[in-house]
Image 1 (cartoon, rainbow, N blue to C red):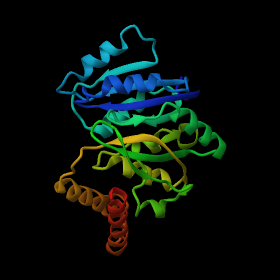
Image 2: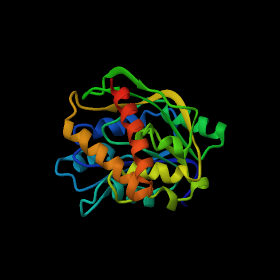
Image 3: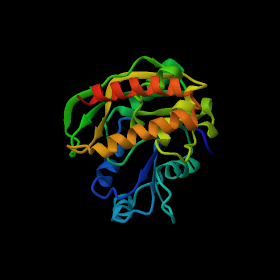
Length: 253
């Protein structure tokens, strides 16, 4: 039955993640919190991701599932597919190349219950291409509201935990737009404040070098969210974009 008490459904979109996926599965198995299910949604990977998953979960009990999509539809639909299959009251998102600390779920769920929050997220640290910690930490505020979030995309997807008993399922379905995760957080924040746990429980793996074209694309995506999804005025869009870009730059220095 959907919404099982204390069960955390972990949704992982998988696309060409063969280099990391076995480590991801073992990382979840090593969590100090034991009431979880892991839903891996393979989005028609062109590498051996699916076969690696099948091998890794052979003989496992039913708390790890692989869903193989027949058509590549992108991360938003992959996450939505995972949520449709979820049985837990709580939903956590994890990207296949990111790293969780062993007590991530335990600490975050305890924090959520303490705050009686619908939406929580945590601090995180940048890692290199091998997920080695770099010392560059993104701290988070104790509370984040919609207006604040527009100018600071501080919520990192792999740190999020949602209580569907409070949010419902429709609100957390990801739209089919670029930067669908940010669009989802803003939609939730229109109804619920998010509580931030300022502890590093996730490592964000990223390449040693970022292409300038990726930065241009990031600006284009956030601008389109302001104008098309949030329907902000030109002035408000420019205002938020300026502070978004400033904070994004400082975060990476």
